Image (cartoon, rainbow, N blue to C red):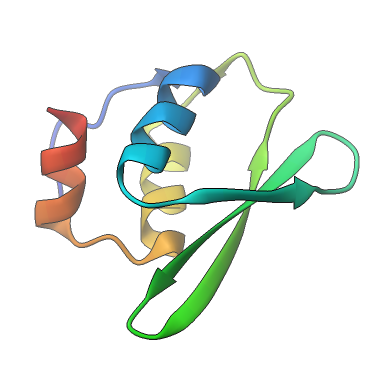
Length: 79
């Protein structure tokens, strides 16, 4: 499990995800936006809460896991 995952602002998380290969898909319901990433030949679609001011470390880790990032990839993206 990656250590020292920081709380991130929404714009910071989006920049990190886009640098890791995630792309905008469309607006979701209410305050959510859908992003996707191809991982191991499968398209993974993840909703991200756009209404939150700062995202907690467990929420950030859960988003990375839903996209299929490994511990090494997460550590590299957060540096």
